[in-house]
View 1 (cartoon, one colour):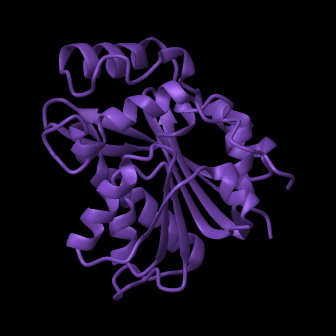
View 2 (cartoon, one colour; view 1 turned 180 degrees about the vertical axis):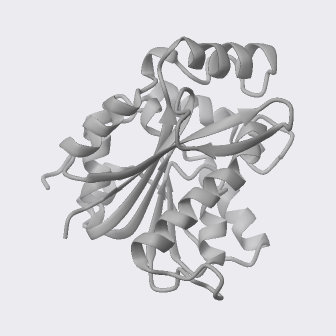
Length: 249
């Protein structure tokens, strides 16, 4: 793949997350929704990886031998569990201030994780390849979703797996993700998300297929305000949802 530069980076989006970097591991801070969602995300990710690579999750370090990239890794909320499961993990983020936060927390946790201030496109230019690319809640923040998805696909080895999550674009998602999360609950600073940048499941499948990957699964992440918890749903993809796709051998 020819050099892609950093054309998908949206400087305004990066600045938003730079401002919140120090709060990544505060479970009651600005990333509280992500901490609440994380067990649900991890359940989906681990099941997809185990299924695709024939790994037994009841064994010690079931992901040993797998090289995993978490693109847009933030403070390392997904990198650390992947490392504990035995994977070799690279965490990449375009927001420079996230990297030292992630490095310090990994060190405190006794984990070896390769954190880098870089982009998907730069990793492609460096000739990097991975068994798994975790592409979680990033595609709605980039300037060129197709170019970014192409770069993520180029980073996968043949037979590799990409797990990609984002937010649907419809009136309900505006109500829940913008009005609810940012204005009513104040879980996130106002302006964290831009509704017009949200991506429907069909649009995401289009991006994935155009990038040369084969979608194999999709699920909704559904928040229950009564139990105050998240769960996976095969039917309700109306707000947050996740997909799995593979690169043909």
